[in-house]
Amino acid sequence: MSQLLDPIESVPSYERRRHILDLDDFYRGETEQILNTTDAMKEVMGRDIRKIPTLRGKTIITLFYEPSTRTRVSFEEAGKILSADVINIGLSGSSAAKGESLVNTALTLQAAGADVIVVRHPDAGAPYLIARQLEHASVINAGDGSHAHPTQALLDLYTIRSAFGRIQGLRVVITGDILHSRVARSNLWGLTAMGAQVVVCGPPTLIPMEMSIPHSGSAGPLGHPMSSVTVETSLEKAMYGADVVMVLRLQEERFLSGLIPSLREYSRLYQLDEERLAMAKPNVLVMHPGPMNEGIEISSAVAHGVQSVIQNQVTNGVALRMALLYMLTVSNQDR
Image: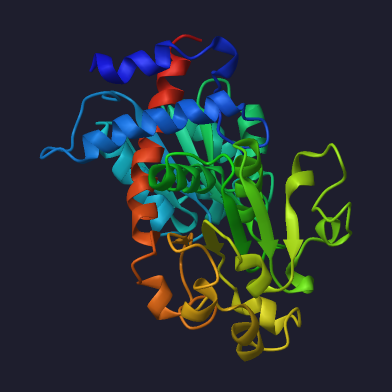
């Protein structure tokens, strides 16, 4: 067990935190520490018996107000591998269905003994709201509206680093519905902080307005953390020289709301297929946060091809969330 405890004990005190809400306030060293701890958790997952007593006696509660498969299951599996007690609560199974507020629900869970509350909510800022009200329990944002999804971004960083041994200097293309993607927002913070060269690509109607206004050809004003991000509306141009391409799901409501002419037109211009993938570097990684709409934003051949690491992302998601649960609970013991 000491090999799992040593990395945490070496973390400077300013890097210890109670909540994981987004990556906009993460130090690079802190992100690297999380990725290194994930390596240790990945080793645990590779054992014949995937069970260690690290979080025995701790209670993890997942509070999901939106449907989820990958994120919810991975948090549950992460907690159970670490021997924590894991309780899953959905909207229909909570008092929210009777009109109880999110804050009162969170306070009730804290009073019932929750050490960590993992929350997914359709409203941006919901995890921040309850984090300000809780005195003891930690909050992990598992996705809030179109705002943030920090654990997905961290597992994406880990997947990239596992493949290349680094993130610094890699050309990472994020393509699809940038405007409404919480995954894209958190990845932009994480990737730029780790030194990647990020290109966002999609139809002009699905690019945030602040990114559409050119600032010396970048996605943000000079001096802003996003000033190094490039905006490209041609997927062919964006793919040139790419080390990683991260495809985002196109939601049907974007078509229905008139932001794109049709699904057929979107697929014609922005589907990642074998021809467009060939424009990238030979060892390019293909990523997708899921769920996928095969045949729309990504072809089946690419989604299940040799360059796809989409299933690796799912596995890495469990190890990454193990690392976060471990770091938060160990950190809080000293508070």
